[in-house]
Each structure stands twice: as C-alpha cells, then as structure tokens.
Length: 219
Image 1 (cartoon, rainbow, N blue to C red):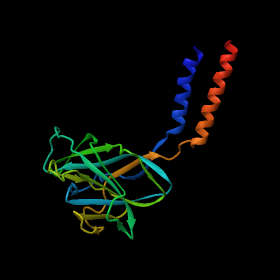
Image 2: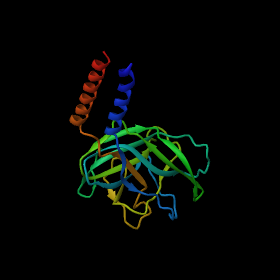
Image 3: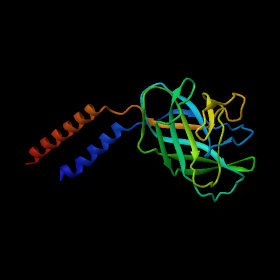
Image 4: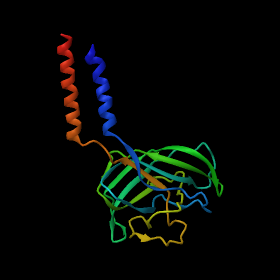
C-alpha cells in the first residue's frame, strides 16, 4: 500500500525536475503597426532571423497574423508549415533542416487591423527542435501548396533581427529595414534547465532504494 502511494509522488517529482519551459526568444507583436504585415503562403515565403545564446530544445512556437480581408470570428484554422533554416552568410540556406506541417491552436486577440482580425497561433512542433547556440531562421507559412485557403498575413514586430523573402524555390533576398515586412512577430518556448539524464536516474535510484527500506520496515 505504501508503494502505491509513494511511487506516483516520486514520478511527479522526477517529471517536475526534468521540465522547466521558458521563453527562449521573442519578437513581440507591434501594437502600433499601421498594416497587417505581409502574405506568407506558397509560393511567397517569409523568414525571420533569430539567435540563441545557449543550446536548447524548442517545444512551442507562437506567432501572430490575420487572414486576407477577414474580420470574422468563425475562421477555420488552416494547416501551417514551420521551417527552420541554418544561416548562410546572412540569409537562410536554400533548404530547411526542419520542416513540419501543423494545425495550430489559435485565440482571437480582439484586434482589428485594416479590417482584418488578428489571431495568436501556437503549436508544438513534433519532434521537438534541438538547436545548438547560434543564428538561425524561422519561416511560418500557410500550407497552401495544393489549394489556397484563408491567405495568411504574418504580423509585424517592433524588434528583432533581419528578415528575408522568396518565391517558390528562388534565392532568398533580404528585406529592407524600412519595409513593412522587416520584423515578424513570433516567440519560441523551450526547455533550457532540464536535469541531466544521469542525475534523473540517480534520483530514481534513490527513490527505489527508499521504497525498499519502507517495505522492509513494514514487514
């Protein structure tokens, strides 16, 4: 009986020690933006540069945007592609090293910008994205390669690194800092303080040893 009560508590303790999600990088949405941003759906693709100061695992991606000429609260959520690229002398590499299709969750921000309703989206890319410290690029685009749907616009941020644009498989080109597409609103969440695996195993071993002592005393 003691084991049945103690083991779940031990597992909860181990789970809590292994997960500590935090915002790793953020470019907040610009509340004073004068436009809704730029289209990001096939064939046009936007990408934004970001830098990580430590090795980490990205477990969650958030972004802001609207749909062309729509202020309706009844909008079907389309699929999106989330892509990560290595940095190639100041622009994204031609091919992503990570490319996944997701159907994100979304929430209405109650903001109407140029007659378009602004949404906050978020998704857990599976598998999680493990990155070393360094400079990368992220691209988020509506997955419209087979059929155009809601026509997503990626909202602007007031801070951040460089951004780039391309059509189809054309070469990437940098966006001018004065361009409305220069900074894009997104954030990356991940685990950066997880207990190392050997430490976790040691904790688990101590817990099992403690359970053994309890059983012997009970006997």
